[in-house]
Length: 198
Image (tube, rainbow, N blue to C red; front, side, top):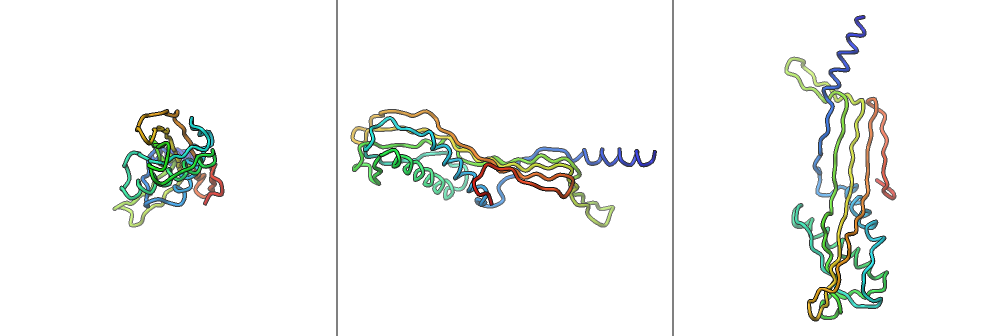
């Protein structure tokens, strides 16, 4: 009978640690985050088409929201521009660095580019007590740490000489994920759709 009471008390104590939190990025851009974003961008390009003739000359411009530090935003948008330019090259377009050398200006409107991180935890969180002279470590029955990379954008195509809007494309999107699981304190495994994850 005493063992049942102890087990019930332990379960209640561990259940008090259940929760869901969003963990912010701990570094400027981790390797996993870079892979999540780059592969989300690559996947968003698979269905990309442009309603202009093959062989047309284009120049690129990219705009998006400035949420992280400006230096990160600039490098992210540069990567997006070059990735889209590469796809346009595969579609037979000629990409020029200067607007005056191109027939069309292709503006990439980035609606979303980033990672979403979250954690689901069931167990007892670490305990630091002033009564007990030592700390209790985290006791994990189940823990899921999830990261998702997401990219969404569209293209506006302008006539370079007149500035007239020629066509806008629909939105294109891509995503990727990397999840880490822990069971019964020690057992861990990963689940991902990344190619060659870290």
